[in-house]
Length: 192
Image 1: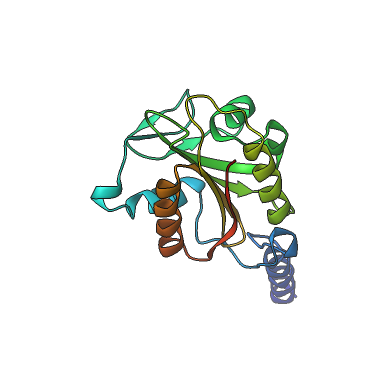
Image 2: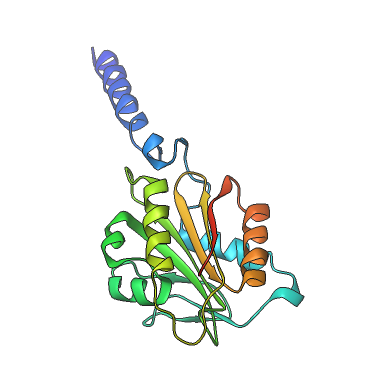
């Protein structure tokens, strides 16, 4: 009787656990499966690591309380105002993300600003990208204007936004697409 109870309990637990985990459904752009990347910083580190020495530029990452020099950094998603004015993500969209990392040109964010966001379960990736695009394109720029915006999805869990000088964005995009499994451009547009 004890063996039967243990077997039954094991079967119930296994069934319960298989329903949990990092599945992504159609609401995240139609992809499913677990993410290869545990955190957004892994994505930004991978892209930054793919840069050829000649293409590198001075960067900082993270938010104001936790800055990282010469590398991408983890961005505190509770800093909604900073998400908006540094990375271009509307404050209202902060509730759609559970993790973020950033990489910004040290001298001028309009030359390059990039961020990776892990979306919460159930957030529509394409809608998220479109809202981010709308906000970034509507920005009133100071200290020069960025030329290009690119938004990339990565393995159904992450969205990368990057804007800046056209050549800098092209290099970033190529590094992302060649380095990150399951990456695909979903928006690429000039910033007028």
